[in-house]
Image (cartoon, rainbow, N blue to C red; front, top):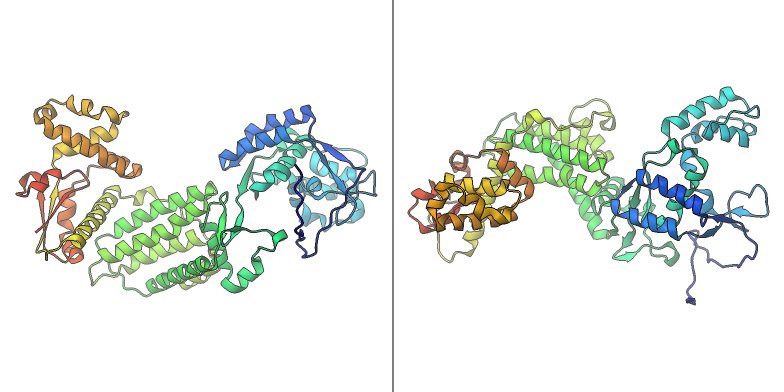
Length: 516
């Protein structure tokens, strides 16, 4: 079916596009079965991000037929054997990654040296008497081999059906196996206020306009944080403006630590332990090209921890030394996202040189404090639960009781959490004679623990298996904080010691809460 569309098509240069039918033509025979088989043989060794685009590449390799490779008008390279034709852009742009490696050096050479034999030597290593000035070309050959094969090619997902698959065909046809592409990252599309950006429809927001209105750091952080590279991003001015406010908040937080007194607080080790976790996760995310996830860890994760840290601090404590140590890491973590802001802050923190050349912050396992992290997570969840209950109460409360689960329930929790098949939880628990003696009480605990485990984040459940957490000690050590945070007297008891019937529902990592 032919669709007759009377709407004008607009070139990126803002002129109207007119179509002319050409009857003579040169073609690239992507339909050649042998060529297809060669590309298919290389494809399994290519790392694709995201992995699910592999099926689209496989489909395109099979689907491609002969491709018109030349045109009459416009910019381009003349077809060597028929100079009345220009090489069509997609046909001429699929191995320029190789040219990138030597472009800066080629500018220094006499153009007369750049013969076909010179390029055969540069890129294919073909030695022949026709190679001019080998002593000048040898360093370029070394430069090419230092960078090739490329690790990753970055492009848009709508080019899988042409340009990105074309480059696989052309590399397979021209280069030896050891110089084939090693990976590709496929980007999503850009939306503007929910509609696809399209230069032909005039629905675009130019990068230079975005930089002028919001600044480079804001644009960069929004684009890397609004979606993963392979997902579509939606440019909305109000969201970009909120990103700028986030950067301003970050800058203010870092500057506030510069002259803060070197006091210490009860959760300094927790904050620095959490920082190791964020640094490790951000690094792993960046290595997988997950820029949004990396930013979630490097910015929002650290910021959330700082809010809890400030809440946990006694009034007389500011934690200046701890916060400055954190900010040194924080600024380096965010340098790939907001480099201009981070360079300014790096100098303000008293560092020499540029943050872009500073060592990347690596997670230090020696700073990990898993038990302390679990304890603070327990406190945070408990305070949140108490606050939720208080909002619903029609009476004025006078006190809060926190009942901690008994040891036998912790054993039930650990047995279920460690089980390969949690559907068989009752049978596993009841293999223990002491549990069988508890009868229905144990059966109910199994069901309650199973439900809780499914609701908790898997990483948290795994940590609870690795660490024996003394919940009563955690609450006792934080009693002053709990009473300050809740605004009521707090009593901490073992569930089996409590006089309240509700204490019987206490579970590991989820104490029973009674409001008096």
